[in-house]
Image 1 (cartoon, rainbow, N blue to C red):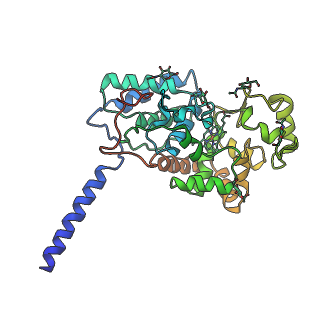
Image 2 (tube, rainbow, N blue to C red):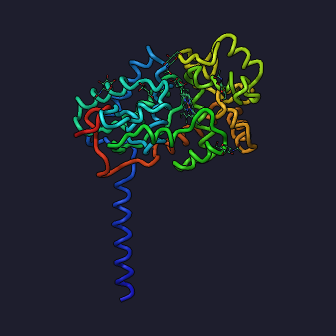
Image 3 (cartoon, rainbow, N blue to C red):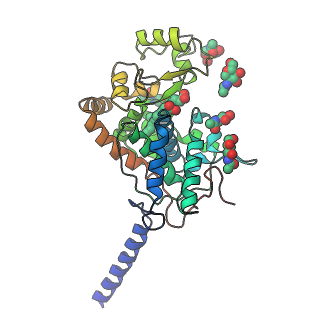
Length: 325
Ligand code: HEM
Ligand SMILES: *[C@@H]1O[C@H](CO)[C@@H](O)[C@H](O)[C@H]1NC(C)=O
Ligand SMILES: *[C@@H]1O[C@H](CO)[C@@H](O)[C@H](O)[C@H]1NC(C)=O
Ligand SMILES: *[C@@H]1O[C@H](CO)[C@@H](O)[C@H](O)[C@H]1NC(C)=O
Ligand SMILES: *[C@@H]1O[C@H](CO)[C@@H](O)[C@H](O)[C@H]1NC(C)=O
Ligand SMILES: *[C@@H]1O[C@H](CO)[C@@H](O)[C@H](O)[C@H]1NC(C)=O
């Protein structure tokens, strides 16, 4: 009797295990259903990033925004419709670029295998391949994500970190999606590529406490320089500034070097100097680019798993900018 119920319990556990492994991401998820998918994406990226290397920054940021809002489910790619303001049209979207790039890759993949490869996976793979093809780190992208059918501007506002957030708030927002302090520091290192708008630092430069002042945690010399040559007034919302000056298309330790010199552009960059834990993580990165790449890869893979939809959840969108009807 006892061994029988023991046996039954074992069977139930086995079934549960099989069920749950089916719903996991896996490397090469499309190996049978669309064997060329990953190659098609890589080829397209390699051919096009060469002429537009700055897109790599846009695409990794887009993947980050996708994952933080509703999980990595391609919801960042969806257009607003008459009754719905989508994530794309939320204030933190500023400079999200590269939507056309993803939409085109999707159409090339659709031509090969219609209705098989999700937009969420295409975004994750494209971000990885584009960063790697400009000489940045490589990370594993297990696939099998399904596309979400919900995309709401308000959720982007609540879930995404903002440039004025302090360390406590950043840790809370990362913690909300299962990422820790190590991930926060490592992933922030992606800001070694790309650009910001002056509007993202206007208050920090020109009206920090509402008295026409500059954030004292920003290196004084650097602040003066930015105000004189780049962001010349508080209302400039078009000028772009490099986050890692002189190497905006090179994935290196430049971001961390800037941060320790108190030249990170945002308060959220300065926040990484607020605790001995975060300072130690930065110091460790500064010892070796290879070490940074290896740790970065781990955090990216972790980020790519945030609240993914798998199995029969969600859908495989036909066009990334529109949920299937
Ligand atoms: C820690 C919290 C973070 C905050 C508060 C933050 C904030 C920002 C802001 C305000 C910009 C400039 C937007 C603009 O003015 O155009 C930016 C750019 C960028 N961020 Fe972050 N970010 C964070 C984390 C991350 C993460 C985790 C990644 C990727 C893994 C990332 C990658 C980038 C890249 C590559 C750019 C440049 C985009 C471009 O050139 O188009 N950031 N970020
Ligand atoms: C970002 O959102 C604003 C509204 O907040 C919208 O006007 C703009 O077109 C959006 N940008 C992109 C790239 O979708
Ligand atoms: C961080 O910011 C939050 C929200 O603005 C605030 O409530 C909190 O007191 C701040 N924490 C620190 C340590 O400054
Ligand atoms: C600076 O901030 C204060 C307080 O929020 C505000 O009243 C003032 O209009 C701001 N100045 C500018 C130039 O935006
Ligand atoms: C940028 O600033 C100009 C002039 O100050 C203003 O007309 C425009 O609406 C602003 N754009 C955004 C996106 O805030
Ligand atoms: C989504 O919006 C973009 C920009 O407005 C537009 O070019 C594109 O055709 C739209 N895509 C779909 C599927 O509605």
